[in-house]
Image 1 (cartoon, helix red, strand yellow):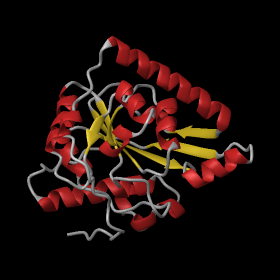
Image 2 (tube, one colour):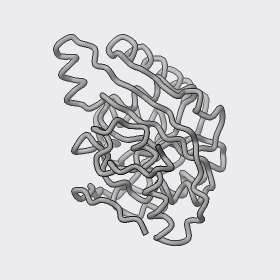
Image 3 (cartoon, one colour):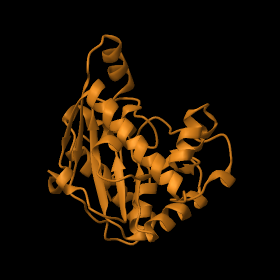
Image 4 (cartoon, helix red, strand yellow):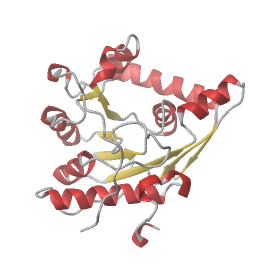
Length: 245
């Protein structure tokens, strides 16, 4: 069985608010706000960055699908909103709910609030229900911004969801969106170069009925992401499977 690389301990949510975790209803006001958010993101990305989008032809026209990304910084979400042809649902850490303004905006957009580092069965159920409605749900398997720029060890949640729901996985690799890099460039009145690369959708064919299969599925997801990234962003997954080259 493949051995996953080790990384610093992942964060564990220190609050417990399962009452906030729900699949967002797609009512008219939320659809309207999501359209506004995407338009604002496109405007900001176009004005403030030099963005390059690659492989958009691989993005599916409809769901259900699980979108997996490497997570570098705040600009990741804006770039996803700006580049992709449809609004996504996403899992967001519950800690952000209490942030002034940001938490409210995220609630208006609609996210599935997630308690990290805990068996959050309610969030899993919400995501599975979303797939049942044909939605596209985004998740960062690393579970946080990377601490090293490169990929950190992936968590089991993405593989479990993909196997349980039997949905395609759409890998999206991001570069240049690290907070220190983006904000330093903007302070100098320079537009940072950032990229978004959509890879070919793929399936995890095994059922999520054992830890070994989920572990192998997680490794496959992370290796596919690594194959879309330059070597300096691959981090713990420098050795890419020949099947992913």
